[in-house]
Image (cartoon, rainbow, N blue to C red; front, side):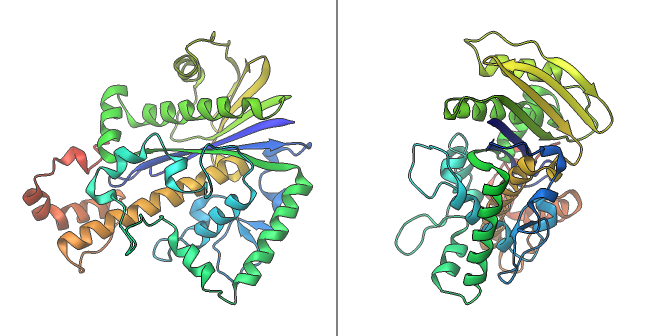
Length: 349
């Protein structure tokens, strides 16, 4: 049985909102080739937008599933599916796919900012980011039966493919923490690489006692033009395994589209692949979807907070350069009144 990890992010480019990095972990007990992409998962899984009448589970590049202005329905449904197939052993009770268990390391710091603070319901309990999908399910929508059938067929497809979901973790960098990391490491590319690999090593460690693995494969979506990762792999491994020797990292290939490395972790052959459009492969695709779900859930809080401060006429933002600048101008008078330093809410690079 092979242990396969997928790494991807959401929010690398924007000036507003958090950067979210996700790692998914899978046990594969078949000869399924990850590099075959998403084709073996069709038609039960499709990388396209979803409605309650769709006869599939959305699975793939989050940019093909989530459409701005149309809500989180597709991603929420995918999260519900991941919850139903998750076989990991976290210390907390269900539900597992909430921000609290997925991003324990960061959530308290993130929610200390008023624009990410969780709303309270009438009962005084914090509302989950995807509470809407729970209420929709409880309402017994006539489309639910179709959705449940889609989940059933999708689970059967995973069984046939020999694929099991066993781990998931997030890192969330709010604007202030993102700026601190950039100041420390020098640029945002190094921040993304450092955070992504540190998280990958952590998830790898959590999964090692799950089974006697015959091989380990790590697939990362490659950002920007960086081709060389051997030094970063060794540096992050050393910081994550302080009591263990750093294994030799061999360069298999470094090209325009892929960078591939090999090493031995705990005596097990381990390959690490950085690939342009890596979210066309199922492990990074799952990470892409959950990272996007987490970021958009937090952006809903972000826009909701500033709408309450400025007024209902404030147009929401996705946080990308041109519109982020417009949004910054719209909230500037209130930023001044509230005396909020710019590095607390604006990502400098």
